Image 1 (cartoon, rainbow, N blue to C red):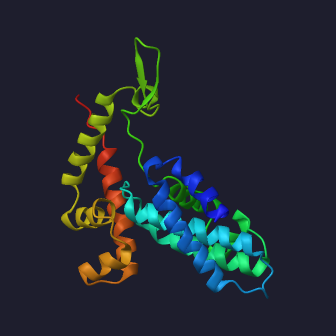
Image 2: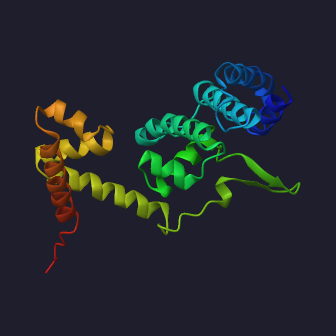
Length: 224
């Protein structure tokens, strides 16, 4: 149980009012480790138990704590990553490296890091959260943010208007493909089912649609 409390304390730093719940959930992970542990494998019990305790706590945080909806691809990779880590831990007798996990999942190291960021940040940070105060003035998270891609909010708003205008100018079918892909977050397979065509046709039509949109957005009209 000392291991359960130690891991729960680490996660309670981001959900301070949930410490007791984290201990209970972590205890379930400990019981699972006792049931599943096989002494024939190379992994030490404490190492194996740590992994299952942390996994149960992460599942709790993911399911019970409100979060910003992450990309579907990362949501699908998260349980696969955990299962792969558990399998490699048993096989290797030690914690697997990021390279070993990424190779087993057949994804890039960069993509694995995105999944890890999702796992480590289950709770959104409020932009109004106070960072520090000197008694006279207060500094929030928002005060510290700077968008270097845009010189002003007005420029970002103009880009949004241009995009909407460009979408109205492209063909109906091309617009539908783009809306399915980027607005409704559908996979190419799901789009194919919606349109009654093959996934390969969806891929070709999407490339064509993006090309049409690109040409529309980059058409300059000379006033003279």
